[in-house]
Length: 271
Image 1 (cartoon, helix red, strand yellow):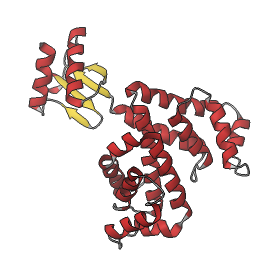
Image 2: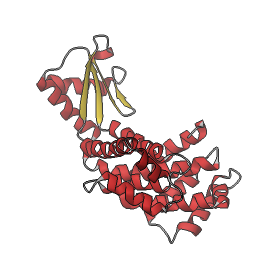
Image 3: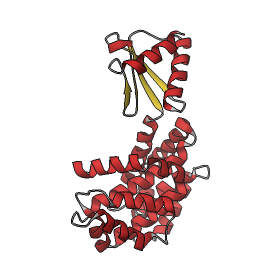
Image 4: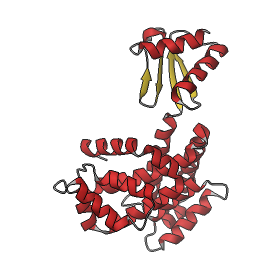
């Protein structure tokens, strides 16, 4: 995404269909990637889905007519949501659909919490490291004369038999359908999506004074109740922090300006 309008549309869509992506996991990711193949192959379809002169209802109807019998309800909801938003270029719509598919795959890993996402991130980055060590492997993975299926099979072998289903899917897609970028850059883009998801499981805590083990445990319990999941605490000491504590989980910030939530956390820490 290179434009503000498209970035905003992607962010809004991911927020709107986030639960659908998480619940759909790898199965949904496969459907979205298959839909992306159709979108990439049909210029008329891309133009229809990104034409601001077309109403949301008309674009939604196009999605229904083309994908209604091909994909499940979750994929259809994601496609309709994307089609109902503003895109600066046709390419941006496809990029957004690819990102949504990667989020669905990452959602599968997120069922294992931060550790699950870390494992998926590790698989993707390890694949790139292995590929970078051999020019022969790089040539084989980027040789467009070789069938996409053969390149995907090679990628799977490089990942190893213990790789997750999400890891295999993301690497296979990056190698078989890199969409105009080098496969390793596509893998890195998928890894960035996973890293973004990891941030939702890390609480960046800044405190005015060091916390002892008991205080950290109570803080972790309070954050678990507040955010509905176990979080990894990354604690930094800064005597100048406002209110004595600042917590950031993804884009959600709890600090001295949010007195009620701050006081609640401080009470739990002092208990």
